[in-house]
Structures are given as C-alpha cells and as structure tokens.
Length: 143
Image (cartoon, rainbow, N blue to C red; front, side, top):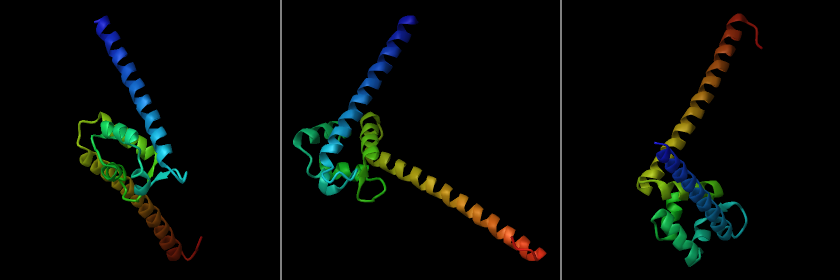
C-alpha cells in the first residue's frame, strides 16, 4: 500500500513537471509567433509558425495545420488568441480524451454561461433601481 502511494506521488510529480514543461514551451512558441508584440496571436501570425514549432503544436493538439490550431484555440471568434488562451488551450487539448471541437464547444458554453450570469446580475440591479424609483414616486420623495 505504501509503495502504491509512492508510485502515485511519483506519477503526479512527473505529470506536473510535464505540464510545466509544456506551458513553458507554449509560451516560447507564442512569443516567437507574436510578431507585433501585442500579446494576441492572429491567424496571419500563427500561419508563420516554423516547422519545428508546428510539429510541437501538432503533437500536443493532434492538429496539423496552423488554421486548424487557430480555429480550435480562438474560442470566442475574436480573430485573436491571448497567451493564456493559447497555453491553456494547448495544454487542455494535450491531456484530454475529448475531441478538440467538443472542447471548443464546452469552452464556448462556459463563456455563454458566464455572460448570462453577468446579464442576470445587471438585470437584477436595474430591477432594484426601478423598484426604488417607483417607491420614491409613490411616496413623493425622490432620492
């Protein structure tokens, strides 16, 4: 039992090091591709990927063309990918057994959910303001 725990700890440590190495490598690739230094990769920039970096990305994501990689990572359809979205997207793709299009849809659904929650909060705030205004108008005293 003790050996099994040690093996589990060793595997966890090795996986953590592999993730850290992958993130470091993705940051390097991102910085190589970000020609204008904007912190956002465009399709034009990712199409300039070197063969070496392309092979690293293809191995991590199981996608071969820069266009496929860009489409998979540009979850919001903004035409640009931040360094965090790039690194996290490649890392998720490399460890997940879920197909990349499904991962992309999952991130989009999560983003829609976050946006919906924000809209609901704004709506509740507006409703509170309207109720206060209505109360003020009915009592004849405006705040």
